[in-house]
Amino acid sequence: MPTSRHPTRRTLLGAAALSAVSLPSLAQSRTVLRISTPAVPDAWHAKMWTVFKDTLEKSAPGEFDVQINLNASLFKQGAESAAMARGNLEMTSMSAADIAKLVPEFSVFTAGYMLRDPAHQQRVFNGTIGNELFKVVSDKMDVTVLSTCYLGTRQLNLRDVRAVRTPADLKGVKLRMPGSRDWLFLGNALGATATPLAFGEVYLGLKTGTIDAQDNPLPSVRAAKFHEVTRQIVLTGHLVDSLFIAVSNKSLKAMTEAQRQKLALAAQAAAAFNNDNTLQEESLLVEIFRKEGLQVSTPDVAAFRKAVQTAYQNSDYARVWPKGLVERINATP
Ligand code: KDO
Image (tube, rainbow, N blue to C red):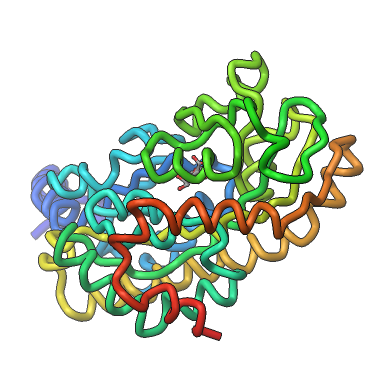
């Protein structure tokens, strides 16, 4: 046995051999969770993924390898659910419109003026309506919704100042909407000419004038800096918008029950972080944008609500909504 304090060549080789074996196998035993979102880094619903990652690392040290991909760098906006179905992605935050592509009844939440406010949103999705619909989502999409995030309340944001009191005042306005049928329907229901465009292209579209307007919650306007390339905000408040933190069932099945619980708690912590910060910031942004020189106006919201609700009632959407669902949503306090 060597008596020296210096390790021998043999023990060094032994340590190297050991680490060569143990490091990759440690890495392999971690459950990889690839996340893809179009959110920009400064958005609360982007930052919440770091909260998710940190919470999970604390509760299950070394068990998960959480990979956060922002700015639609891994999958383009709206392609995340299909990527999850193919096994190429484990987690994302889906919009109601993303879900409605495969679960038509979910389109009820793509309808303007359906949810009243953020508290109503949380009660609807955290109660029996949410439980029932998320079960259908799991069956049809093979993904599990872990928690509901408040993205904010969508408002109109125009490149040039315009008198907007009612939907008629938006006639001919090229309003950018995310690129799917449900979003476009909403934009047209507001009285504008809805134009599909990915979120990542909106800033340039507003700057160059290929679009006249976009709609998003004020915290998203701030995070993506749309206020730099627009002059007006019209407080239509047409959609209390949600994002649903979701994980693929395939990934869930490969976890232990204890890991599944920790995952759910981490998703709740992420959503709570997002919701608290979004609500707080949203309450301050009208004043902040005014100070920055934007014109912020309040239209005839009742006229917008009436036009939008009528458009949905007379559409094919209302026909696929389960009987009594709208009444149950309305009856939720
Ligand atoms: C948008 O494209 O307007 C939207 O707000 C839609 C949301 O569902 C969500 O995809 C969001 O963009 C992105 O996360 C960027 O904030």
